[in-house]
Image 1 (cartoon, rainbow, N blue to C red):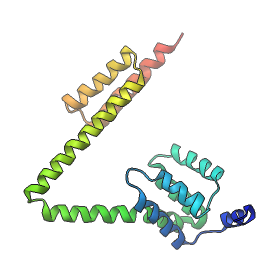
Image 2 (image 1 turned 90 degrees about the vertical axis):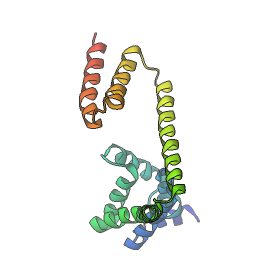
Image 3 (image 1 turned 45 degrees about the vertical axis):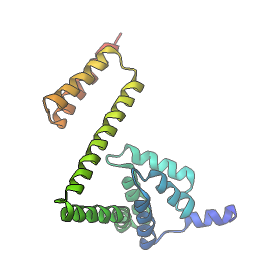
Length: 188
């Protein structure tokens, strides 16, 4: 395809069905995240945007509240077809994972009394907890915390992990306190 053809294709307006099916494909591919699949579908396969437009739009979506790829669905869908485009784009992205989770939930409900299933779920929960703990350790190693930062981390860990402080309260208390502390600490 020549550059002129690619440019012409990039300017075509996708239909609602195109948007739904494109985002449904992205949702079907996304185990653990779909941003890379979204870029491939939007830029390479469907050519709704070029690389520069995609990067700019994704940058905007990253500063909006919520997850990046659904934000991108809303913005692109709205751009091409208004509210209906935003709706079908998000619906397309979510339909396959939703159906998969429903099927797993139904299967679990049906099979949960089986000893083997309870053992498997317990093992999966242990593995997930281990992965979260390992990610925390890796993040702490890379953070190169000074003693005060390590103290803040320890205080949050003890408050939430030991004393069972609700996460919202921990964020509301420790977030502003640590920001204020480091702001006043860095003043000349």
